[in-house]
Image (cartoon, rainbow, N blue to C red; front, side, top):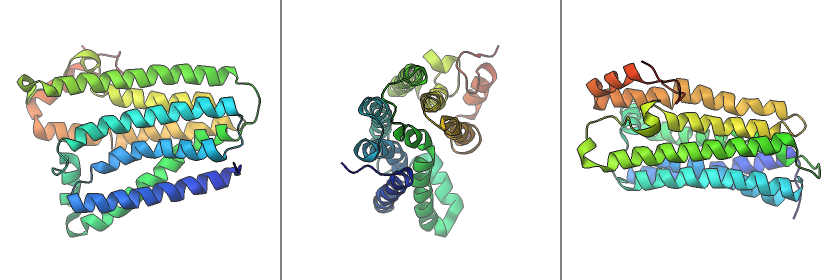
Length: 264
């Protein structure tokens, strides 16, 4: 296997993710459902992990641990999203339909560039992976073990939150209601919280490598996106449109983000 320098790994990852997202955009154009971008945004991280596995100079044990974490998390989330989206593949999710309506006649062109920006975000967020990929130290260290432990907690928490929400929605008696069971009783977005915590775990993992402190960029970006841009604002806006009274009441009794900081 040919070992690549850091910029080669990043460039190959960017080209690959951009090609994938271009193909996904063509599919979304055909079926008129931009929601499929979420599936492949998640799947692109295992693709980057595979590139690191094949071409990074890091020691074998380090690559096994890091790439396993990234692949398992990306495949779990992507598959969870695929199961949800494929149930109504030819009916676009309301938040994307709302964006499409706002963009009007230029929606498809803007969607293409939106998909490409998602590919670029994959590579930008993968900074911790690239940092670790350059570490040729023969032994794993305390930061890497701590990061792996935090990763396990975060992935388990997100999977539990996703399962609880799926079970709630599956019950026909809950139609028009807001999920307030399990972790959702304490936070309006426990899935987003644990997603962010997972990126914190990658940052902790990267601290065991030279220049690992630069990996703080990833959880910082994720926190900003989730709380200010595409995560919580878009989700809550849609909930207020679809079930205004129930969701307003829910907002008054729950924390917006951290599960154990319940209001009231």
